[in-house]
Length: 254
Image (spheres, helix red, strand yellow):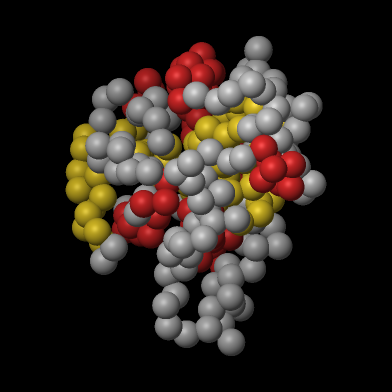
């Protein structure tokens, strides 16, 4: 089975022995690292480009997803860092979002620039893949995992203001910048997609100040545990999918 992995951080340790290749798509050339894990081929993409330096609003989301499609993956795991809007969710926790609210402004949101295609996001994340991730998270000692949460996606690259956070708290649990349009594009291409979010800080107004150093420090403290969850999840996958993600486009055209 072929599995996609998208992250803004370095390749997990279990992918240390990789082959690097370039996948040319109509949206650009994408660097992909390929490794074998438990009999599966894993295709890793740094969300922020080959050098890892693209800000969230400049990420080539369509190119990343299309490169995985061209590599014939069926499932995609997305890893991201987020801030907490909810006092019950603390730095160091892991959240598996079940829904999102899109507050971004100027991204390319679809593969369908012509034709009236309206993909259904009643269930935004693949229930099959989320359940596999959750099973593995629950076995991790020392991991505080929240099996659901609403992810508020902001444009960036700046962090949010306290007033914005107070508004987002009325309907969200975590806030970040990279989930959209990644999750939407995956659904348009019929890929199973689940997100694993590492909470690295409380949002603006919920702590004295925010710094990039804090985000990096918390993620580094948890990356070994997250890497183990990813490896275990990938090894648990099989070709039998109980979801309908791969048929998302069948009834989406008007």
